[in-house]
Structure formats: structure tokens, C-alpha cells
Length: 220
Image (tube, rainbow, N blue to C red; front, top):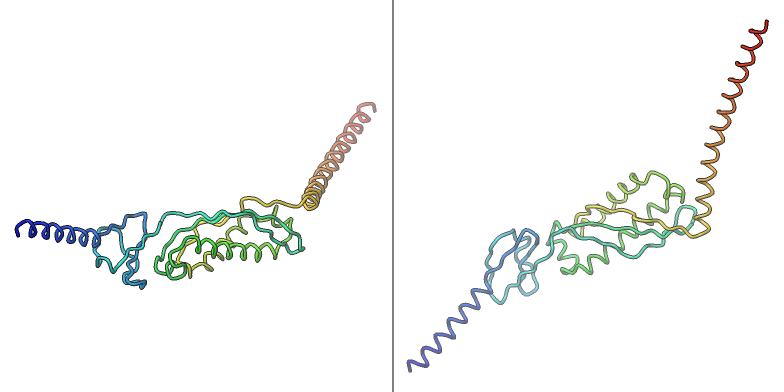
């Protein structure tokens, strides 16, 4: 009947519309994307723009391509003297290879951050374990940060990310170590001040001696 034919036509149109909507997707500049089919990656690293996919059987996986931060609880790290430090650090990174990232983490940022935290802790332990407390606290901090950043960047290539920055925000010392480091710093400061005091006394002595010689000459 005409009524039945009209209803069937409406259903057909709705189905076509649903299939069309499920065939179109957009990737913006803040995203990395890939297309999967039954769990297998069919199109890795889809570029920015408007794209088509097979409806229903293919899915689009999108991930945030902007700068990410990993900032966890401080790690207990041993120095070369087997002294514990509480080291608070952070990492900034971004996804650069979406297929590698997806393969390594199944597309989970939680998994990624867990793996990154493990490697960050390993690098901290490796570098701090070669140095004394004094070297870590008052040594070449910028050079240490550069070494750690470069090493971490190399170690996470298999995660599909790029390390933008890796820094130590804060190093907390146990009370006994705090006093020890303070004592060392104070000793260096006092030694420097003592050298200056000796130099000043020496200069004053020379001035006094010179002044006495001039007075004697005038009397004669």
C-alpha cells in the first residue's frame, strides 16, 4: 500500500543517513588518530582533516596530541654514599608516533604514564646513584638535567612519545642530611670569610707599617 511504501522509504533513508554519519570523521590539529577494524590497525597516523571509513566495522581511535605532563609523588633515591633523598620531578611529553604508542599501550594514557614513571624512576636512581649528596644538591644541576632528559628520551622511543622536558623540582633531605649539608656549606662559607679576614688584616698591617715609616722620616 502507499502508506507502507512511504514508511519503508523513511526507514531506508534513516539507515542510509546513519551509515553516512558513521562513515565520516574529522581529525583536528590537536589529535593523533588511527583506524582499526576488528582490533587490527588498518590506517595508522591519519592526517588532520575530513576522512571516510567503512561504517560499523571500522572504528576511529583519537588521542590527545598536545603537551602532556607526568607529575607523581616524590621517589626515594639513593646517592653514591647510600643516603636516601626524596626527589620530586616532572616530565613533559607528547605523542609523536601514534601507531607505536597504540601498540605499546593499547591506546591507554594510564598505561603510558605507568611505564613512563618506571623509566623516570630508573633514570633518577641511575644518575643520583653516581653522585654524592653535595653534588646533587649544589653541583652542576643543569648538566644533570640535560643528561637525564637525553637518556629518558632515548629510553621511551618504543612508547611513541617525545620527551620535551624532564626536571627535578625539589630535593628533600632527611633532617640528619640537611644538617650535614648545611654544615658543609657553612664550613666552606667560613673558610672563604676567614681568607678574606686574613687578607684584610694583612692589608691593614701593611698600611700601619707604611704610615709609621713616614712619620719617622719627618722627625729627622
